[in-house]
Amino acid sequence: MAGHSHWQNIRYIKEAEDRRRMKIFARLSRELISAARGFDSEADAAKSPRVMAIIDRAKGSNMPKELIVRALQKATSGGPESGEIVPYECRGAGGVIIAVICCTDNKNRSKHTLRTLARDLGSDLTSSSGQLPFAFEQRGLIVLEKNGVAFPDQDELAVMDLAACVEAEDYERDPDDDLLWNIFTARQNFAPAIAKMNEVLTSDFKILTEESKLKIFPKEISLVDCSLEDYSKNLELFEKLGEFEDAVEIAHNMNLQVARD
Image 1 (cartoon, one colour):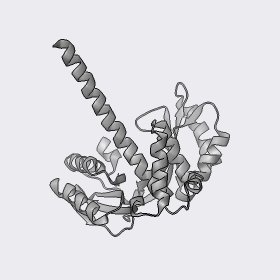
Image 2: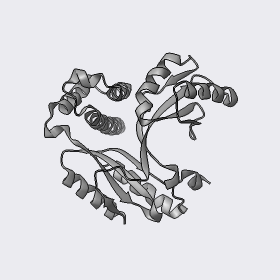
Image 3: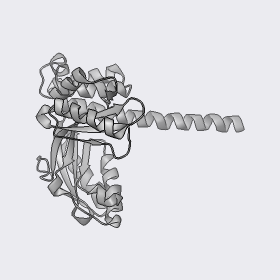
């Protein structure tokens, strides 16, 4: 029985890992469909810097080639299965706003599902206007990883030079990992910045392609300070909404610095 239990545990672990991988692949597929919509062919779509960046992330996640090709085919088919990008807004505890960006072929279904998820946690969907909520903006994020030991002063000087070289808006050391640096660009400068970064990058750093992408960020003026109780409620809501299968991106405007303090 011990051997049986051992193999059962292995099977459960493998099934859980498979489910996790399929969820990642499904989200990457929706991102690809979103980015490649409007192109006349797979070949044209694959030349887009945004699409190329997502394909790099997909490969970094070991997404099978046939799934990547299938997503591009859906996006360029022009059919309803190519989906539509729709932003939704949810109001959390303490006046916090959560933006959920969905790729959906049925806006009413997505709206109903998100509203149900939010109401189950005492919140509600407050907008489905099709516009990004005013509290947010889309920016480029380039994540650099330091090769080897981190040296704060020297590393910051090197990253500052790289950020200036690609005309970035800002940079910061990742708050959770001393070996990572985040470089922020204007939306329209993301693809050129990635290309330039690849040209000038030294062996001291490498770009984490699976993490570097266009992302939704809260505007600084919209950040909301909330209590620890509200923070916990909003985090639960944020995670629940993020699990929705149509969601390709989700963001909030909680002031995390205050929550950490």
